[in-house]
Length: 119
Image (cartoon, rainbow, N blue to C red; front, side, top):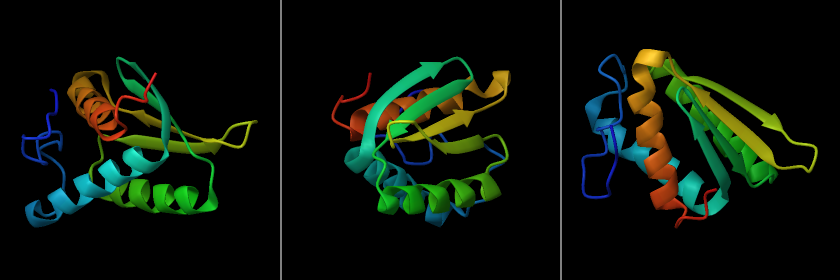
């Protein structure tokens, strides 16, 4: 599954997502904002996407809030947010092997939103 700006913002949401359809574009916009303003690097693997984000307190607070809400409605995702030794944030997003399309969609969204600053 891939994402393009002209596609629906619900394309990468799994069917079991409990977030109401009307709220999905807003959630997608929150991820876009995070990626556009704070993403330093993305390194996808089949079931893992590792994103390095700006280490500011504002970004940490916003990221923790966003992934907590996303995990509450989409059980396919497993998010881990840690601080790196150089004071950046590392967000790991994992999915089961049968849901790698979800990672593909988020990776494409991160790349598009960050203006290709991803690695």
